[in-house]
Length: 128
Image (cartoon, rainbow, N blue to C red; front, top):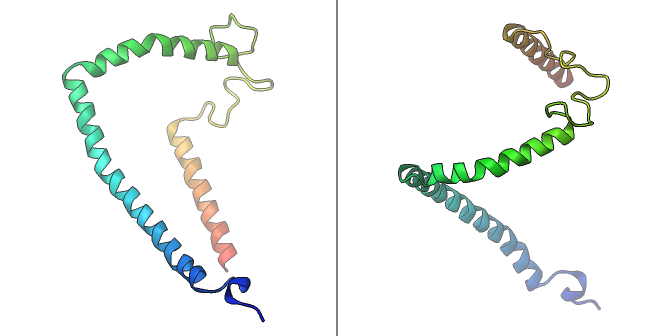
């Protein structure tokens, strides 16, 4: 004869089945509440830092090291001033061979709309 504990049933299993979703919902609610309260606090803190000049001082202090790091990475990836060994464009590509090369924003918008229309038609065909 088997007992409830051997088959996976019993009051402990039922309690787990009831409490796990409730705990997940509670955790989600707490997270949403904290995010909702944190956003105004962060904005207020940024405004304070901007008013008393701390933000500008921090920006100035970080600008040098960040600029140096960006330059270093850019040179390694080939986007530098041409002094590095890496090519400025990937092999087989030129600066004007991308999908949006020599196209006005009006042409790009027309292409975007055409693609969206084609996508809708494909989705409609799949539903039928």
